[in-house]
Picture (cartoon, rainbow, N blue to C red):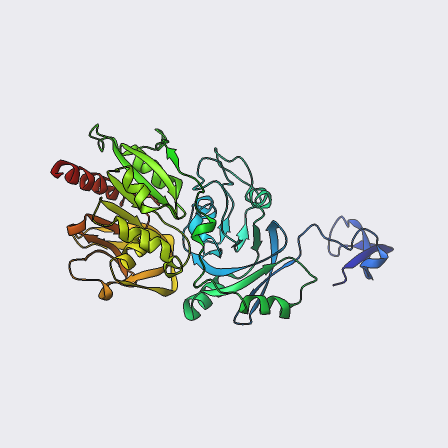
Length: 427
């Protein structure tokens, strides 16, 4: 679009006398004439100090959303999901469970607290891209070490802003999660990007193998004393927990350590026989990305461990437990992603405000007799927790470690400790 430049000229000076005044005042009056010229005639005015749209989000339904880019450049395909959290974008960026997905933040203003290196949930960013309404032009937080844009650029993650996130969210709620393509490359046509979105699918893809560790390691870090709140939760006895890394978040490990556990983290493909040789007091099946039906090897591992030691499943671990017990999982319309999901504990009657991130759920009607549904999501009634006392099993479909403001769900780690203690005493 051509930009108009204005040429201002002063012409015809004249004298004007105010009427009906005992002491007339002479004013110098000048006529202002404005004329326009194209920007090409005025060097340096062809570009403004603002950023223009240079990115596209093309969804598989054919809609094209033009936006402005920040972070990295390029082209990336992924499943678009919306997250309703008001804060915590850095934890979201580093949550391995978002592998293969673009995260759209419904909160319109993102980036104002920058990023720091204490809140990361893993050693890298796993999500495919970030979609936001407005990016903060400045940061204001005492722990800020870097801007969000620089952080994403260094990690090769594409971000876009100045896009109607409310309209996209409504579309996802109505039609379900959609595959999309983010691109900053002008050389690619809309048709090419649309074809990319329609030829890719996240269902049935093993995403766990790409986020799991490669070798076992010991975890020792606890929750920083500055943030610790479990002052009376330890009884002095250390329990050895083996944690399967399906995409585990650091804070799960910190909370276990803060509750007095000795932790060994193993890859997703580690044989169950090797785990049982270690004679752990309990096994944790962690969160992770994607479709639980795409990782039958993980389901078989869970089956081999059930009944031999107490187990605790979180998110993906919960879904794998559901399948290992003979139940079925299904893909939800648009999943649960956010830090404000109400969950009812059916045993206590208490309602917890939980952090959730999953696109799949366990069908409770498919579970065998004896398996108890312990928690229910109050937004849609889906299964949010299981227990099978006969085999010392407990699981949650949400993140008890996340503490999205309240610490409502941290008690789950204490219950896992009690379960291991009970089995050890009765052995």
